[in-house]
Image (cartoon, rainbow, N blue to C red; front, side, top):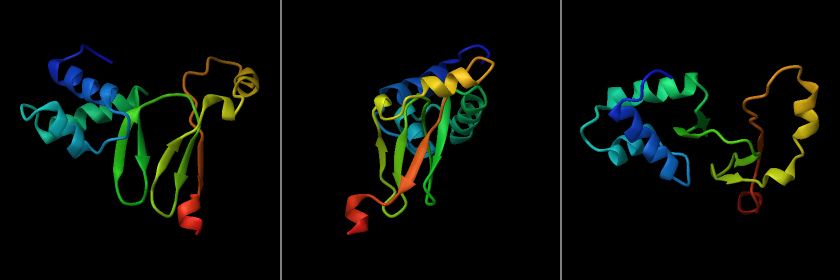
Length: 118
């Protein structure tokens, strides 16, 4: 990523302090009104291109969060997202299969949570 502008630092600060994935609107509101929505979308696009953040789609909305290497469970029914502990999957054998440097691993488990299964 090129130089870090004040706007970029503001968006990154919002993402770094959030415990959940946020919509662009939530990021815009939390970053302060001195950023335009267009600027927020441009910054998010750049962060996705560089692999610093990931986009989560649940069918109803697009949310953004910092990338981190551990599995996630997504409920198709209610849209709930749950971070699973890294120990839930041993990624080391998979990383060793790659004849290059693994920079990011994204594992997404999908299904229905207990509440939606009834």
